[in-house]
Length: 378
Image (tube, rainbow, N blue to C red; front, top):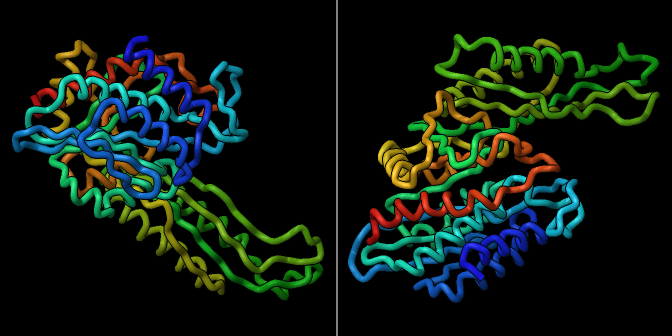
């Protein structure tokens, strides 16, 4: 059996046994078992379930990290593949099984071409989909001890021709946050709504103004911003009660970190002004905070050179991706870059129940990383 087939089999095993964020215990064990015969110089447990495999050269040199993700999504997979998910309501529908396979293949290549100088680190990060796993990793003492000079990652991109690399200097994916708003009025009998204070009408005005600000009034911002209403919770199934409490969530996004800060400030002002005008108590909070992923120009040049040496198509992106990525926590404090890798024009989109990572892109993706590795370590 070829090395590549071993990796494909690993990918399909990982697909069959997916695990949610920070619960990737068996996934982590499978990765450790795969790497054992590759003889890394160190295996480091990092964050909750993460692993880092270190290959060290005899001479001093730079430290490069190549990162992938361990976790799956809480979505039911639809197709009836032989290696379909065995866990009800959980599936690798973002391609993290494929990303792990790419880094596993890179591990094989490095094991066969061990570094002469510096360190190469293959990082398997937990909890990318939720809980900001990258933030936990970056804040850990184990990551600080690695002290990377550069860090790289990719994400497969459905809808783009296979073996096409999507690149952009500066902001590669948007900054975002969850903005939770609470309004408190006064509950009353449904027959006497005038004796209460139902916050619904004020909530609709707040929503309209925030969405209009972000989605239509671009004069306030340097670049693109987006606001999306996610949920509203109001009242109970009790037809005799006019509710007095409301909670709603809006996702705020911006291509640039400064614009997200400004969008948050303006949204807070809208909430405060309208709530006070209508006699409501109010509060807000933030969650799932993602900075923009900022690609270092030197790292982008390294990826470009690698793509050209592997005869891959490089497509320069005009705009950042609208989605956010916790890889941003790595690039906030380290020189790094993330790139997109075309997964096929007819492939269903990410997070779709019919999505499945294409095994054909494992080899070219791994060699994209490997060429960067060779340039620094051989």
